[in-house]
Amino acid sequence: MIETFLRFARLCAPLVLFAMLPAQAFADSCPEDCSEPAPPPVNIYGHTTAGHLDAATAGALPRIYVPNRSSNSVSVIDPATLKEVDRFPVGSKPQHVVPSWDLKTLWVANNGTGRNGSLTPIDPTTGKPGKQVPVDDPYNMYFMPDGSAAIVVDEALRQLDLRDPQTMALKSIIPTPTCPGINHADFAADNSYAIFTCEYGDGGLAKIDLKNQKVLGHLDLSKMGMPQDIRLSPDGKVFYVADMMNDGVFLIDGNSFKEIGFIPTGIGAHGFVVSRDGKRLYVSNRGSHKMEQGRAGGPGSVTVIDFATRSVVAQWPIPDGGSPDMGNVSADGKQLWLSGRFDSEVYMIDTTSGTVTKIRVGVEPHGLTVWPQPGRYSQGHTGNMR
Image (cartoon, rainbow, N blue to C red):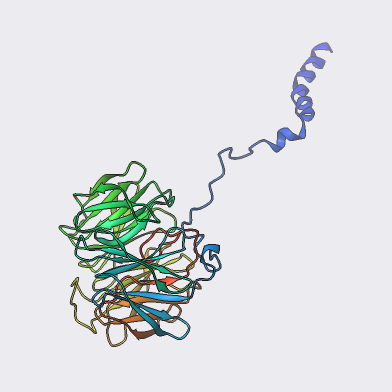
């Protein structure tokens, strides 16, 4: 009798203790998987969608600013009327119109011929230029992610000049001797490094440590060519690199700094613009392998790549030929604006239909910008916003 009772007590004790546990114990338990929840997906373009105009852009005139390299001028287009409403002189060989990090100034990068370069500020609330600032060889310009310095791409001297973002006084220099024709750039999702394209020599890419301001490495692409623009995918994993000689786009894993793919696009793949919803990449194919003096009316086109599938989803030829180069999209994403490098014109492309409207400007238009644009700050170029 006693043995039976003890055996019963041993069997029932765990059940009694289980019933006495507090409800919180069950709430904190992991019935299947106790691992940490997955972090939210990265979207580096999450702040650049329609409706995210920063307060710093309040009062800015809706305009398209077009640097005419061989006319030493900037054409100003009203996107509502699709007409040139102003044209003013700037420095020698203007290459790109670059929104400042704080979104308050547009800088015209006047490349010059080395030591006679300059930057011309434009007030976006008036659309008028200010006093030029002498700067050596500003082919292009970017900004440190925290806004602490402007990064002038000194192509001729194979270096990056870090300057005060307001006064443009020189602060420091990052030599890039293995990157001839250092050109365009984009930044890692965590802003720890940037990758610059090397246009000349055998082509290739340079990876720059932004914190320590030094070159981390050089990557030779599988096919010798002429890398141009570069842009990061929304998830921050893959850099897309346009190559003008290979007529397509290389895919680069930024962290490992290795080539992982190639997408054919069109003759003279040159510039990139990200769609306003951050889902597609517009590739401007300039229709020529020539850097300068290409023929007008060439087989230029725009290729649309879907980021999610890394595949081509549309191909828009320029009617009667053209030479689409650099540009950007409107604040609402309905218009894609590109310069026509060898045709003295600008293309406004309907992003739904691919329909093209042509507008005459100065000679050899290059890196135009559309302003204002959504985003918290500008990383440079023609408005790479984050």
